[in-house]
Length: 82
Image (tube, rainbow, N blue to C red; front, side):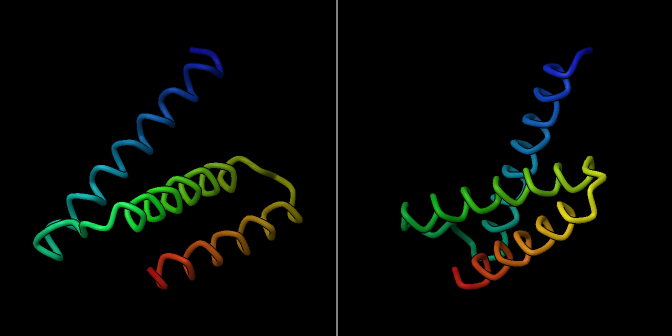
């Protein structure tokens, strides 16, 4: 499988992770919040976080790793605010 195939596997993994998180949220709260804008923001942040985690795993640059670490901290802060 080439690079494109690996990207599809990563996308599928992120999708499965998102579905699992959604199920966990349902269990915690009984139902998913009905605010579509909030749900869109949550999904967007989670997908961005998954992408940054993927980049962090493959990058070798110490500078880029620090940038990713800071970006992840910012996304975690945003998630906590929602």
